[in-house]
Amino acid sequence: MMRLRQWSYSTAFGTKERFTPFWVVQAHRSLFLVDRPMDKALAYAISALIVGFGVWIFVAGLGSSSPALWTIVGLVPIAIGLISAFGPS
Image (tube, rainbow, N blue to C red; front, side):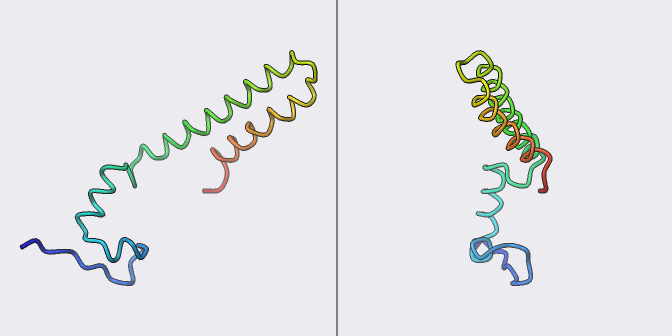
């Protein structure tokens, strides 16, 4: 018979983790890359893509009929990407 690890209420886990068997939580963490160093790299990559999209809008907007509007529109994802990468975590 498999023993299930019992969670105490003093742990930092939420309700779902407290009432879920330990092996299910461990499988979830290994399958979905939770609490792994690659999470930070993936977060930075997504932020870089958002910034790159903003730069693309900015550069493409400079040659449009209303460059001031597209410059402002391009600065929004650039700001969001930079805040996402270097803002408070």
